[in-house]
Image 1: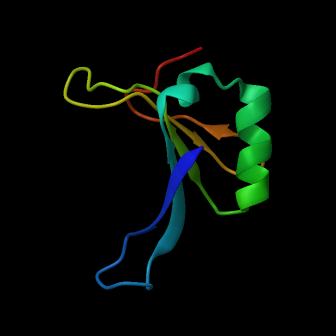
Image 2: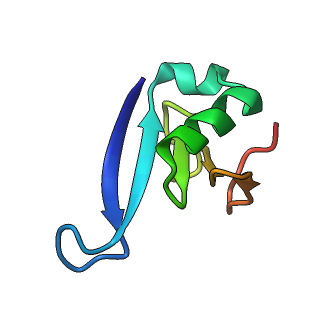
Length: 79
């Protein structure tokens, strides 16, 4: 799977919170039972899965997980 590690809430490199961003066509096919173990393995405060390959309504469908659970998100597509 393709993913990126990015700093968020940072003014300069390596000073923000780490965030793993998973993307690619296979994200739409991952189940909750597959996403949560990935989040636990990464062990960051938040992991995002971009599940729509194309923009819709000026954004993407994103699911956010902590190592413990999925978090609600604005414009989140319910499954």
